[in-house]
Image 1 (cartoon, rainbow, N blue to C red):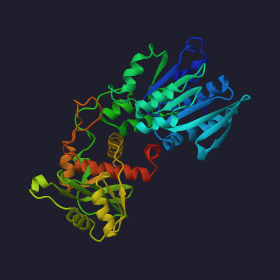
Image 2 (image 1 turned 180 degrees about the vertical axis):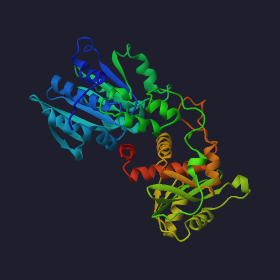
Image 3 (image 1 turned 30 degrees about the vertical axis):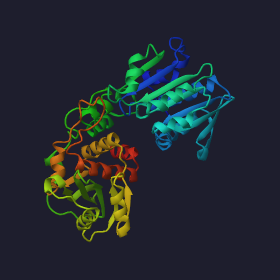
Image 4 (image 1 turned 60 degrees about the horizontal axis):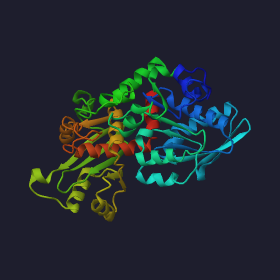
Length: 415
């Protein structure tokens, strides 16, 4: 991978640490739009700084998970480092990389900051610097523990993220207080990435709407408000008639007091169709159903089709066990990361990769009612009219994971 041209902001991100105007600062913060070129320039700048400033030092490179860190940062970075003359020896099983440049060798440990327990992973280390990718997705406890480890003279902190809600702790404590934190703040837009063509910019703009458009395309820290899936349109996303499909999946949001919603999905021509649904509300019907009764409805939904998997709300332990006990379907627990799942659904809806049969009236109804909780101060949907929304979210998260996660989005855009 050859870097032919850099924007002014990319150059500043790479070289601020040796600029007389900024080198006294303790940190750099880069935020802004997706595909704006901030991650590569920041990670390369971090390596140039650390390798020029230290020999025998220990550094932390952190992402939401080690898997996402490798995908988003390490894999694109290593070929660039090789072209610059860096020698990298990666120990995948131990999650560190020894990097030699101009006679200096340093060790870079890879960490995932996915939850509150992650802080213990980095506790006790002595670091010469830390690079935090997707810092807005990490718990505050992990970030602050990583920063506390930077106790070596001359250590610096490098932050990279896409915008979130303006009440987010990182926005309030770091971006709004850059002077107090002795930090340099650099805001990126897509125009700051010279390698991104006008055609690709237009494609990315079509991927998002609402708050996600303002954050990922315009690069703003903005409040989520109104209807969640503003890109949903009955004229675009609802179909009639039968579909011949090559693969079938069922997703389940299970409730006892709350409604249960199951969706039958079929893959045809690269598009997933919601062919049928089962939606049972004990409040509406006046009678509760047992696990076995819901399982019987699951079998009726599947009919004689070969179902590759049944994706179930991870909290529905008794229903998961009921499905396993019958031995007919392979059952997997759903990923229940709500905001990430909503973003994924928003993307595939914008791409036209999800369609809904006109008979699926409950999910169509919920699309028009599912809204953000504007009083919460964070990205939380109102816990009403969300049961079909949840089973769709479980399905989409699993589908995107099986097709390469966020890289699936990038491939869909680039094709």
